[in-house]
Length: 413
Image 1 (cartoon, rainbow, N blue to C red):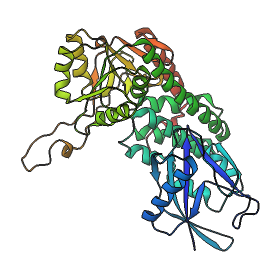
Image 2: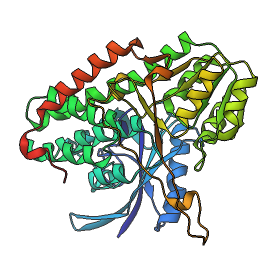
Image 3: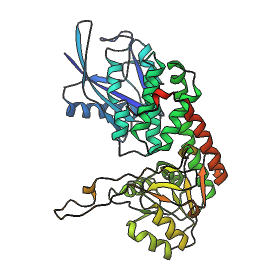
């Protein structure tokens, strides 16, 4: 049996495929990811995968996105075990690659139609997102998970022949994270805007992935253009992060207990040279009262048609403190985070994150809170400042996009 570490380098929804040389000893002229013979075993393979990525990019800091289970395929009398990994590349710049005839950044579904090394698609499926992994994901925000949901639609559309099967996948994706309006909105736009065929859904999903990534970047640019520092925020938001990097003003960040996502944001900004102060959530209100701030800037999990904002627990308290200190509060987000209805889905985190002792205590660990829209100065999006009338119009469009669903696909699976 042959053991191979197979690594997929990912950037903006595309993966890097490499074509082997015509005179290669194994699988000549076939397409592959980044691969090399492996000593076998997941621990060794992880080290080998990082070495491949470092050699290909010249960058030792490319983050690991996912590691899949080993998968064994049998073809032409040969058994091959892949140890699959996926890394998220910050760019598509590559260093020299030995024994490679060609490289291409392309949709992963291109693997289906190419002459590849045995088992490449099976290896990719081990690291690809699924409704199950999206449902279990507590590390990524709603924008990132919405893009993963679009990737699921794209990938499934490449291998199924049945529209009804895709409708079931779309329903499963929405049921995976029912509180995330942006996930439902983006899935609905693909399904509503494509003809009822897998090929049409595949192509529309690719377009929507690019549009979603562009929307988040444009919303961040809107915030950077309109605001001046110093800025206060809390927790983690990729769009807030990008806005603050572009703004390059002093930032004070609430750590966002119990998981302290704000520390991750603080470290990321500090690594890029931003002047960052971190504080406890409880102290953030007093910091706002005694120091000068140009604005409070937060992200959003969901914006309700009423203008109320669902975001990381602590946002409501921060907005109330900002109102008392006469500091404007802005939300930066893509328009797709506007919900089609007024439903608020409260979620509780694990009780042990707050208390794991032996006393008989009730524990409240809300993950999100609801901030009234009248505490928000404005919502900054890819299309500029969105007022209340604009929010209502966007919500109406999202409701229209949701009408694609046939009756058989409206139940959770």
